[in-house]
Image (cartoon, rainbow, N blue to C red; front, side, top):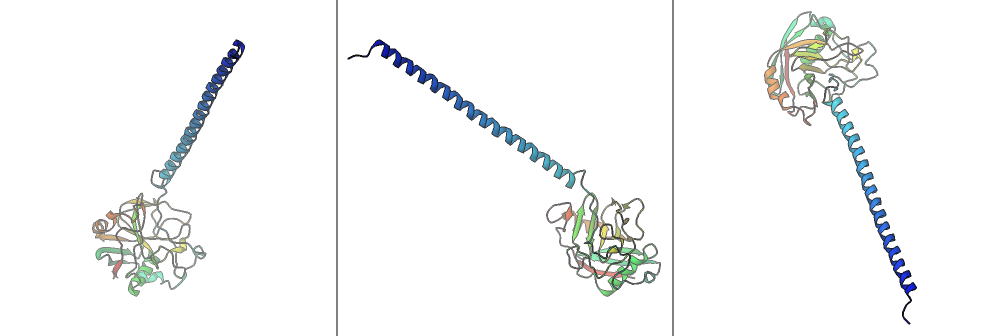
Length: 262
């Protein structure tokens, strides 16, 4: 028996409803996919902005204008602020309140030096005694800073920059009032905020530079490089640090090969 006209109309209506339903579902699914994609893009954008902000801050405070000045420092110890010398520290009078001439040789590069026993008697007495004892020979220069202060630091007991808790002295002597250390300056490294943490380590300013004082003051200036500084810069400092940072171990391994003073 052939279908009635009513049945045909109902079948067409059902097909039309199914078509409209399918169309609505397709539109809905498309909208869901678009919203999901937009959300992912939005989240990615937020993450990217946050990452860029973080990188900007890191660069600013480590390599940009907000970077802290590198300080010639040694590892502190509980005794560094006692105000007392520790170890076999020579009497300041052995510096004889005079200028000592000598040669400091790094990687066979001779540097003419003058030590001011009048301005920094304790530091000069200690350096002269260590030179006479042969302490410095084969000790390394473990640290090069290339900015904002440009300096080479040497004399660590173990080559790591750690201090020697059995050999520390003070006070700070002859620190510049304006915190400016001219090229060729030879000064003692110390722990931050600890005047009596000076010891074996010293640094050489490769260019004029400013190093801010801390709670203990400035840094003891006890000598000057009178010749050979350009050769040292060309032979060691110009190569930068091992990792390319502004503060690290010199890319050219540097050793104290000889020290003489008289």
